[in-house]
Image (cartoon, rainbow, N blue to C red; front, top):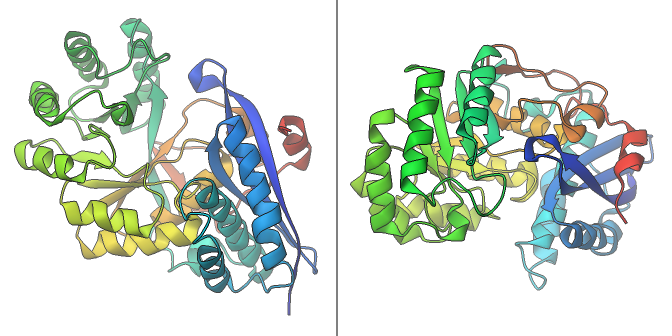
Length: 376
């Protein structure tokens, strides 16, 4: 029997070109087995303190439980981790740690069995998956944002998204006239047929329900594919009222942590596009389980992943196993965690990414680059 002999948590700090060089953080999980297989996973721990805390949970909380176990038993080990964190809390830092380890377990199992993750989590239905070019709006220079969207169209993307803003003083959602001018100009740039998504910082509570209804109706003529996170994420009743009052689809769910949260969101009937991040909501196993709820509810889902090539890989596999997936977020420009971290970075062609049949997640981590960006 193959056994796990080592588990490490590796916090990384890197400048994000899509955010004008702002420092961002992820934490990797590295699993090593007694037959020499190394598996990798990731969580989007986002801030320095949470990245370091996630390392502690991985190495002091979960590693002692999992070393000596068979890495092929991914579902059993996932359940073991879920049971263990009941008194810590199954959300937050513990969810980050579970997400990274679970992703690494699937990578390890796939490499050990010489199979891609998609074949292990339900079977591949699609040879390629649609990607949505996702950027941060430059709200103080709409011309710059126009140029960015024009460039993304030139790259062949059929779905394009922008949101938030480069700093808290100028974000999408806080100035009606500026928001409407931006969306009008972007619709002119991308044309009538491309799918356009806008993303508001709903977690900041910029809109209440009446204001959200007015904004949705203001934007209706621009035929948005969906409006993302219009309200505070846990305001399920507000989302339901909004959805009953408008025609533009609602996308939300990126801030949920576990299947219980997704069940509450779906039961609220306040969402059209459920958003998952396997680097946050209990890994590949957590997302795969929640996809079953989406399918049973006849809804759609997207993968809200905007971090490293590992999370992109997990998302591609999770998109490939269902007919209910719409697209996944994708950074359109080169960035350290997408292009330096792996020797075989993901590349889109005409708005699609091919589902790789390489073993495991299908990406090859460069350990020298891990050392380059390690954060202590």
